[in-house]
Image (cartoon, rainbow, N blue to C red; front, side, top):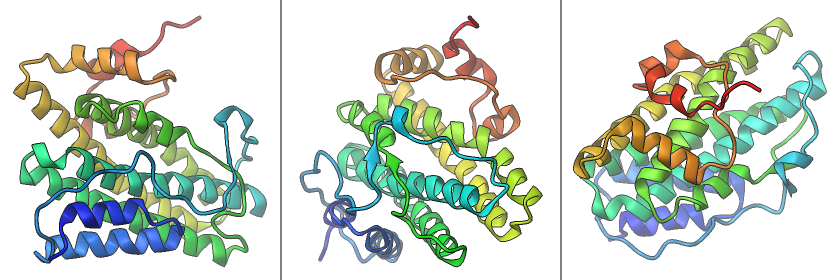
Length: 265
């Protein structure tokens, strides 16, 4: 019987983007159905990637428009699709790398999340083709995976940086993306981002739940631990504006993240 570890690493080592999403959906379905045994294998340092898109340093990425024309809408959806492809790998990496030492519920959460990220990527890749583009047509950046590798040794740090900083940032910026698409008349693309936004609240909530669990297990103060982890392992800045209501819904109240916001210049 195939193990969950083998299935998770199989997702990571699949290079083609659509095949990676399909492997993630299959792994999530098989785990739910009891078709995968518990068991773990070595985890690769980084996942396989398709030949395209070209990966650039985040500072060398072109600025996107306001989603008011076709090219800017293609660029926006391509950027979000790239984030979702990375999110598939991030979810299955956390399963394969840290699942062996965590409760079954932790594994259940992150396998489910990996499947949802695969659904998101597939919706966006399909939509890109409908509006005359495809995933890989534009350059993208590798910043998400760099952040994950900086925390490969430390589950608390991974939870702090990935769901509680990077994914939480998605809660801040996605409503305006949806509004731009609606203003431009692209209601179908807006509906996809609305679905992603609703799911991402649950993903951040899972990050918060397991971050607090790990803090309790080690008798650590969550807010101070979060602040220390972000200052040590996140190279960017946690900056406003914040979607406080969505963050609160996800178990991330302002008192948690405001202490890590840099002072105004």
